[in-house]
Length: 377
Image (tube, rainbow, N blue to C red):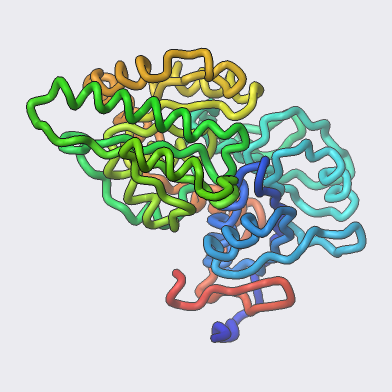
């Protein structure tokens, strides 16, 4: 069904340039889909250009509620605001936007970019647990873009935000998830270590029952013939393939501990107040993962390149036995999100800088664009 035509013209237009899939992960895709829904809710006309595989396109359609188009060609006219959510450097895109007089919205990229004098200033949002919070409305990056940094700008999918926090007391089991792609195939060895660790804990417990270990393989994880899944099932793990967002949220909020890949899932776990051990997929994420631990929001197991040499079972068991760390870490991470309104805070600032007023109606659908119906809001 086509949503009803808006009563007013769109306040503005925004293009999303997003990349994701096997090897790149799907965090960029899910995060930008949440921002796209927020933009639509506020009356922006939205268009999305997605560079990715079938898994990325499917995840986008599920999370955003509409399909993305292919990549933006150099001849494609761009919107007045363009969100860039790509794992690669953005110099070429920023030069193009400057020539187009488009305002950039740079998502989760702390790299240094020079100021392009001919381009209008935009926004840079750094929404991770490891990003230093900005205070006040005058913070700028080196290029003059408004800087919105820190966990209070975390971009949470609605499937997670609508879940109430559960007390940590009474929770059982471990969740193991290395993201949508798990490019280093760390899920299986980490799940085996988690199974051994929690079995050792159960042996010392008078409860007698065997605790659950949920293993989630993402949409881009390659498991020919289900060999990894079958081996883990034989060990007593419960294996899930590509869980829907609401089911993943439920696993996160009911787990006692999560072993998770470094990325957007950390803020989702923070929302559910679930303590976590994190693994950096890439060496360049090793420093940020240590920053998360230094802030008191979890513990780092290191990077994929060194992980096989670490005593994983021992470190997981130590975390399971440390009730004080679990409670304090989970509380600190949850409170750092300040209500989990990052997407709204970001677009409050965008609307203010563009001198826009909130819209009662979403923009009408257009080629490559989509508007929200009343049931989506």
